[in-house]
Amino acid sequence: MKWITSALAVVVVASGATAWAAEPAPLEIEAKIALGKVSGRIDHLAVDLEHQRLFVAELGNDSLGVVDLKNRSVLRTIKGLREPQGVGYVAATDMVYVANAGDGSVALFRGAGLVPAGRLDLKDDADNIRVDTQANRVYIGYGNGALAVIDAATQAKIADIPLKAHPEGFQLDPASSRIYVNVPDVHEIAVADRATGKQVAAWQVPGAGANFPMAVDADGKRVVAVFRHPPRLVALAAADGTVAANLPTCGDADDVFVDAKRGRVYVSCGEGYIEIFATAGDGYAPLGRVPTASGARTSLFVPALDRLYLAVRAGGSEPAAIWVLRPAP
Image 1 (spheres, rainbow, N blue to C red):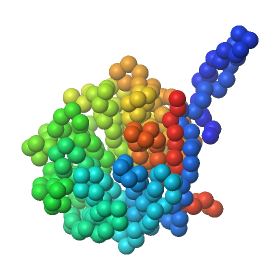
Image 2: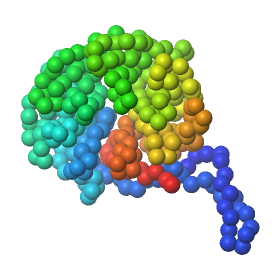
Image 3: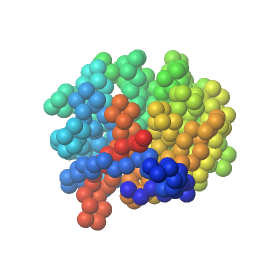
């Protein structure tokens, strides 16, 4: 894989002489798992660690792909969905939630056989999904401005957290009851409280718009949001929204993840790159870009497997696929 960077690494050879060599790529392609006859845009991913399954929201294909990560093959494709864009997995009930943009529904599938297990009707633009394993709750962004709160034990909606406009990427703070939410239509990052079910703060980043992906850097106590207009990675203090870093990044980003083990941030962009940042003081510094494929903007970093999974749509003679990228060292 080509690694784009201006940095050089010093290599000490056996003779004691010093040579210069290009720095090795911190992400390398390990495998490409073809998804079969899948056309159009691919959206978000989720993982079932116990059974080594990756769930792929094949939005343009109206289907959910199920990938066997151990054998690196497609287990099955569930068809008949309506523009699936969000997917979440609850291990306690062995339940998959699939949020559909087309009709606002959330389809449920249970167990190894992924048997249909019901449907929730959120009426409009069901989107990103996050799971709170400790509280046994599922949060789903939808409509003109709300997070639906689902009881994972009963699969019933028990509350809404109102927002000012449609929520895009959002994250649950593992250190508090806060939820951080990208709300691009009102140019803010909303801060909501899971305990009260209300928004408690709104953070703005002047000059930046279209904030879609988000991650929480728990070790750094920062919220990382990526904006598309212009393409910027912005890190904010989780306590009060103070900007700790504001850096250019690749275009058309749709996912961002923190690699706590290596002190890195990965941004996957439809422009055809994964941009990598390294922890630097109170913020981050650019580390370089790894070329991928045009339109490959959604991904999932799984720390337990130490892999980044990238969704690559079909193009030319290449079928849609999940690229498996291994971080190094």
